[in-house]
Amino acid sequence: MKNEQELKDIVKERYTKIAEQGKSENAASCCGATTPSNKVYNIMMDDYSETKGYSEDADLGLGCGLPTEFAHIKKGDTVIDLGSGAGNDCFVARHETGAEGKVIGIDFTPIMIQKARINADKLGYNNVEFREGDIDAMPVGDDTADVIVSNCVLNLVPNKQKVIGEIYRVLKPGGHFSISDVVLVGNLPDALKEDAEMYAGCVAGAIQKQEYLQFIQDAGFVNIQIQKEKPIVIPDDILEKYLSTEEVNAFNNSDTGIFSITVYAEKEGEKSNKPKLNLADIQDNTSCCGPASSCC
Image (cartoon, rainbow, N blue to C red; front, top):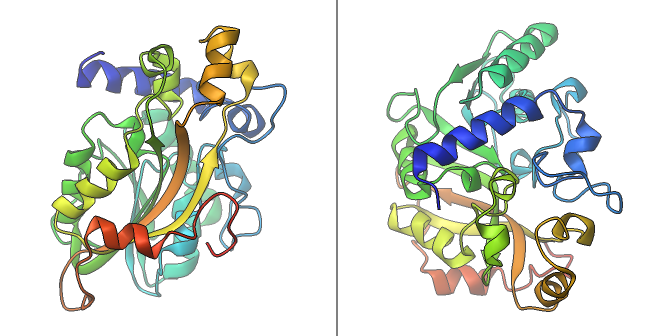
């Protein structure tokens, strides 16, 4: 496996190209990084089109959830979006904060920052700004944000513990986050796990679901909840680029699952008065959130 900087360079290079691709091409592939499927139109993303604040120009089809829908953003809040891309989640968040709030998008790809700023100018938003930087070393001061959101980005960062620590640092006491991301249950085939396209495609860089939740708990967050969970199915015509027919069949019939989860958690403080949960509590509270359930 490549080192952290090499992985970051791969993601930056790929997302520079992805920024210029169409939404349909990105949606039909794994986060825009793989060859699009000719069998499935939408692999990961959720539909934003009916969400208040949605901007079609800012929607590149790269998400795996709708974190802003679950983020409990209030008027006047300061919101930070990690991996803000062309700005769509920032503009949805701005609808919730109103003109009296503030939204900061952070992305390490210069062309994404440029696109997002152009979109903000077109919308006339003077309380939405975009900062270039890594989300594992955010260009933001301590105790800045009331709410942090992110959509399918932490899986692209090699050191996820460092990002979660940064989230804790940047949130105000009593602040919270709602983050959609890709996680695993079981092990990927080596050919997928070691491929650069699949890393940039939000799959190879994903970690085990239980490990992901443990990192959040170890950082000191409380009231950890899985707000939504859905399975991610990679079409065979994409898998066949990396695996033989026998390996595709074995993978499809294995216990390995790829999931998008939206996780909520709070930083302890005046606004946070709910008890700290252990991982067993988290699983018990979300046991109905399987692929076939409707309670999420």
